[in-house]
Image 1: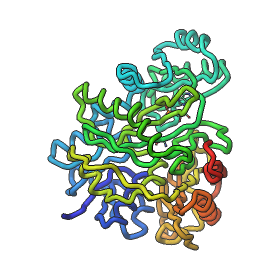
Image 2: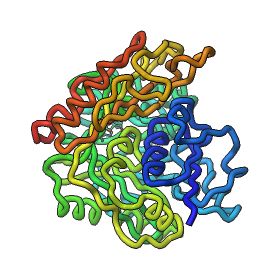
Image 3: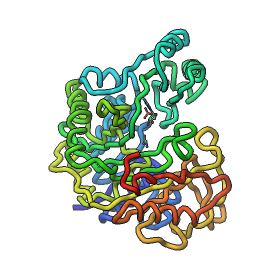
Length: 423
Ligand code: AMP
Ligand code: GLY
């Protein structure tokens, strides 16, 4: 059977997907992709719309096209698509939709209030204890969330979001949440419309700076698997949080085929869902896929066709990815800086065992002899090894080879996990 795959997207997650499928013998085209993906010569990029391409499987990477119904359009053409339709994608597109669904299905989550005016927001916040959590109701690339202990800052942020002053007016409605405490875990499941099967657990580092300081970002690094969570724990999380969500979608008549990403907080009173995303995580994908030993193309096709035959088999290795971000990210990323340390194939000049450079936001310069910064998250240096400590050390050795003006990254990715501790 031919194994032609089209991936929609252009970021690190899509590069990681492309590399994993390519390594298993797939013929991969990414639209629009990026120059960094094409540099290895193993992945084709095109500006053609997925509607105009032919392939055995289409994978839609980011949330925006899913929310906009791109999967529905492709399915209407008879294509095999991994990714929910617009109906299922509301789970990420609207926090209010997600919260209502979770409440309906009795899935543990933070208490919440949906608010549409500033006075009501201030009143709700004044009745809570810190940390205060304020979210926009629309898509904001992981950056629409404020978590703060400062009540005045919370009230100010709620007003800004309600006035539509940030995130392209995404927030004419906001969600205020009870603040939860505990380690976070990303649990990503593959769904075929009936059942959900899990990949390994992963942890993302959401804040911009070391020790979880600074603003929330799309994710500054990740590792997998999470120490201390065995197969039985994962099965319990699937049974309490993920499968009931899929069942609630089914009850609403939604045929959900794609990825269901549960952002969980492991609190003292048990796991609680912080959010659902309707796609693979970024940068979690960079650390989950290298651990998969099963045939990914087969698995994805089965899910897309509504007939999963089993769960992904995962190796016992560990994987770490460190995001190199542009000057000013996440608020005002500066583009254009020239990147040193990469060869013409977009990989490290001095190769390190198990290390791959994933391109998240790069372009080639006019002379075609270097890569330039072209996004907030620029590169993800990813390492796989038998042990977490080794993967972490290799990833940071890779990081040390790369430089560009204003480059910043966290130095504590997987630091605790490398010592076998939960963060
Ligand atoms: P979200 O976009 O909903 O995933 O939120 C981004 C990040 O904000 C999460 O990964 C958490 O670190 C933090 N966060 C979101 N909701 C809560 C909450 N209810 N309590 C504590 N932290 C939260
Ligand atoms: N890494 C967080 C996300 O993909 O939403």
